[in-house]
Image (tube, rainbow, N blue to C red; front, side, top):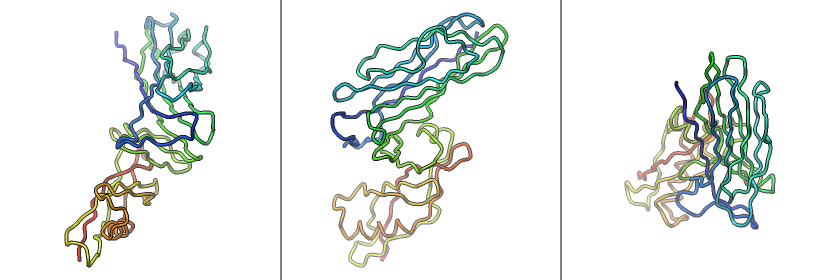
Length: 267
């Protein structure tokens, strides 16, 4: 019998008791917290299943995560709450007992996690967990992460691996893994060289460029130049502002993302 393994992990690290701040490491966008769900039980129709949900992480002090599960009405919840608080420092799971639908078809369970007492400064994760009923069998689908985000000052940022990616208002939810595996990364359509008479010919600066869902340059950071106000940095920053970008896309919709751009000086 075919059974799909269910495993979702989303991670992040925060400090509570003080305003939320991004990690100071070079991999600030690597999320070190966990949010996962899986089914346990016989993969046979009309037999009860256990739905196990885990939310945990590393935080300063006692942090509570608010978990909400959206379960189709045709999946009867026999015991366990679909909304609950999880102590993020505690690895004990939350368990529900559900009965699979009688009617064949595909069903989605959606999980949402919010960590942090302030609505304008919190961490959020979201996943979907598929279940398929066919004949007398139940197939457990692979759980997929939809969002790994931090809200800071009311603005959304996506955990992007090496950095936090600013997300545009109203933009479709996306995970960095989905963009890399199923979507398209942003790229330069037209680039410009810097024009600096006092800078060495061919000297360059690597920029971490954040491109919005409309292709506009949102932010940029120099990666290989320690003097942020140096003449070369200023010249290449001005040239970068004149670049034209194609935004990242996922499932036919444009999303914000980042790329690394080398801008050279040409006198």
